[in-house]
Image 1: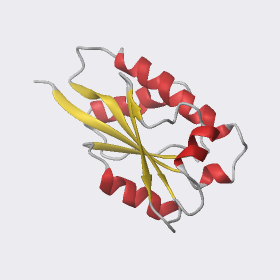
Image 2: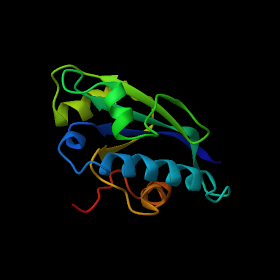
Image 3: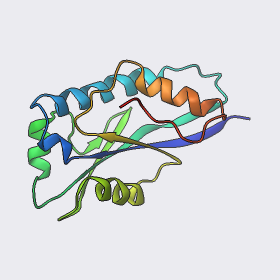
Length: 145
């Protein structure tokens, strides 16, 4: 029997305001590429993810707007593709950790991945994390900081 999961990626947008100008755009581009590649994973795997993957971009609406996010990271537009469903979540006056926590409360996934907005995931990041959970041996996976 195959298990199915809905995957939610929660991204805080406070680090993006402090980072090199192109990092948020490169992060979103990498997510799009990896989500497309992820769809092509082994159909015989025991656990599959439902598509599109939910992406929540969580931000302090007193410091940034959806329009600014889209200008900083083309590809972060609200809407659905076959691989990603992007939502913007406004939380006025909220900082880094609280953005992630509130984003998790808004997410619909069975599995949450938390990302920083100034991190560009390496190739196969999504696939490698998923494979840890697919084995059912892991409940939490963290990257190298």
